[in-house]
Image 1 (cartoon, rainbow, N blue to C red):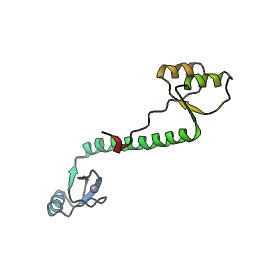
Image 2: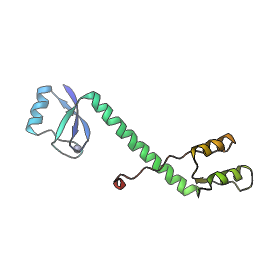
Image 3: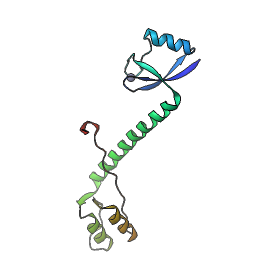
Image 4: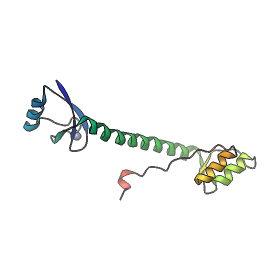
Length: 136
Ligand SMILES: [Zn+2]
């Protein structure tokens, strides 16, 4: 019994169990190997090493993208967007000139560092991921 990492023409990866290398070749030739996700018969074997390096970055990017989207949605709901006034507003709040509230906005990396040095809690929020359909 051997296990092969297989990938279909649509990029779904899955495991195939065979009696041996011959069995894989036979099933492949007959076209009875199909992708369990989309049913495509265009399936081929992936060497394990490249399988790993192909699979992981994609999964991580997807996960990060989802997390980022949730973060942005949370911030949009719970924080007042003060845009370019962020640094100014954060300082005023810190020094008691403004009522404390949740704000978000734009700051450069060095402005952000200055805020932290003054003891002002600020977190950088990575840019919102671009929706796949919007590329190009
Ligand atoms: Zn597929």
